[in-house]
Length: 231
Image (cartoon, rainbow, N blue to C red; front, top):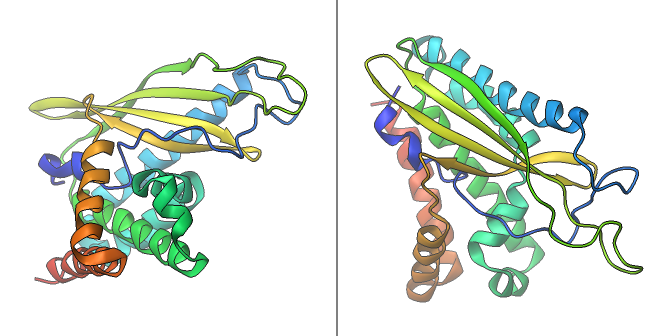
């Protein structure tokens, strides 16, 4: 496993503003229940179990095999549309056509999955350990005033990636209840969050090359991951 580059997975480390479609719960309650905590924990466990599997079978699976195993987990449990909207900024995002939005979501997710497949490429006794489940304070009134949306329920799952003869990596997963499901919307690794860096990077590329140039840059990164896996 390329532990030096774990922190560079692009789908991670994004603090996301509350979605306009966020929901407090199926019954309108703002309270985070034990069932909610268990559901959020199970999502992180599924991701971690998948990563351990591809690490242990890394050589046999190869890049494409690792990609194929991680892909459905990311698609199911990360709210990529919300993440990329935040990375690009609402004003720019809203100016894109639906086709452009869908294309960007697709390639951003493809880069994210590919980076997982590239980084978690070997096993040396690593373990993921859950440390804490925390319901985060709500912002807004509950129950909400008439005509207002209830505050979103959010949970933080704190974990560690423990490594042999190396310091553990702290991984904190922020999840939010959106449209009846819990989704990962942020992962903080060793306290690092690169939202401002990512937004700045993408903004600079757009200014210099336009949106199409940003898309081409991301596609180049994807191609480099695929090419590197065969060399």
